Image 1 (cartoon, rainbow, N blue to C red):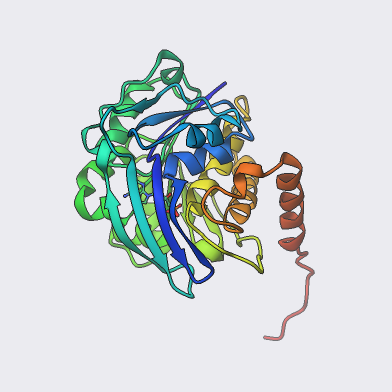
Image 2 (cartoon, rainbow, N blue to C red; image 1 turned 60 degrees about the vertical axis):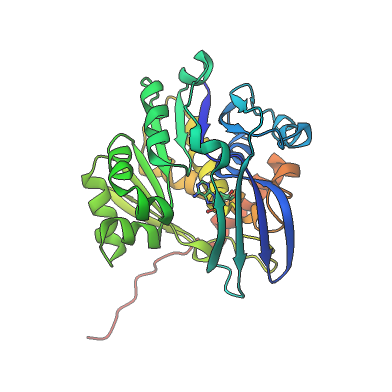
Length: 311
Ligand code: AMP
């Protein structure tokens, strides 16, 4: 069993009302890989520049993430993203997206990365996602994330990429923008028509919804009193969600399995937002994840007692 992820490997500059970091390790593939490393062997595919050093690689390798397919481009600069959050942490402004080494990137996967059981196409240019998808023809489960930038500037490529995967994980606002449907249930149904069997709508601090042909499920975010930086929460959620599926190679993609995967994604994302960037997840333990999944089951449990309502 193994899980391959392609996506951004980045330096992020982030400012929130609770602090700032001018240059920290980030990127969709990095956040995803750290979270998914609790479930399976994860291989990261993507380029970095000369500025990406051993300390950054060490964060991934400390969690057992396989970094052989991280390509170091001589003379290049690592992808850079900068964003600022207001008091409403669901609302962020992107200040800069510098593709740098991603502008010329042509994914060449090693035999081990191509041979993956599960593939995650983390947020990056959709044509790159498609190139990697094509190289992993035998993957039994392929999921994809994206963002408003690619809907704005590469929508046709993104729609083609979506038609080639089993699962789409997007923010609710992105699902609406992509499908031009103001209603989330209808927006998800439109994505299912494109081919995927599973749609996950991430709703920031309000949690996430799961939509398939046979059902709907929703989980709140884990209630957190102290949130410092939501950057990477979506990718960390995806790492828990897809990682859980990767850890069950023989199980059918039932609602039950997918609902538990949602719980693991939610638990992991809740740790991610506690500190900046990868800081908290990098020192997370499996016992802490299990603890939060159990608490999540408890806080979402209720019994529907019959009550004679008045007509
Ligand atoms: P999230 O908060 O889950 O949306 O993910 C934030 C991460 O995505 C940051 O670590 C960024 O480096 C990365 N990111 C931001 N914009 C892009 C983009 N256009 N393409 C790929 N990765 C991005």
